[in-house]
Image 1: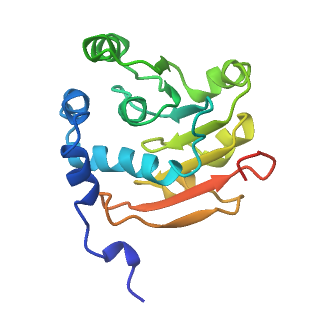
Image 2: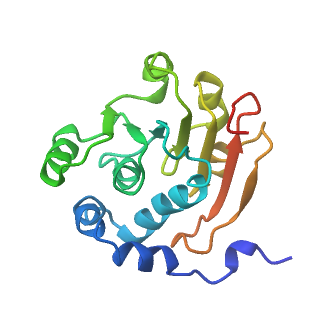
Image 3: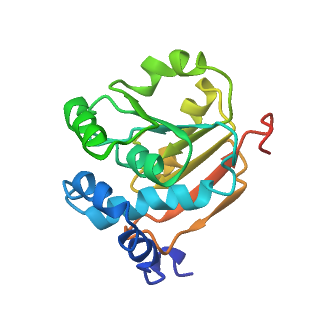
Length: 199
């Protein structure tokens, strides 16, 4: 049986992003990637799949685990949603992200230059509100991280380590292959915490 990953890719996400005024602000961060179209479409996939669950008119928080040195997924969400965003990565380039945020007047983007394990308790201590988690570029065990966090829903994309990046212990609300992700790894999952109000 042929893999569904073999279906032809679609440029839909990239086309949509490039037609938006936010593209000008996003480009400086994504242009630094070896494969900017791959990185941009991976981040946009997270937004498209979580957007129906994001609370409209009510505060919510999105934690972007393993968001890389340039906090790209957090940056995209901060421009394209009303959520408060926190990018977490031990390699985060604070000076670069701070300069980008100041240059474009971006609000709703904070960060921790740390591993998620080192800041999980601090994130859980933040004021209660719906919490969403993205694992777009994260090379971590998704299930282990979710076991440590207070969360309502999560998105993961298996770009290279499906055994780590996809849930092995939870039943996804939605999963499949996203043809608009311009990457060889396009398998995604949306997982909802059964104890959270969003479910």
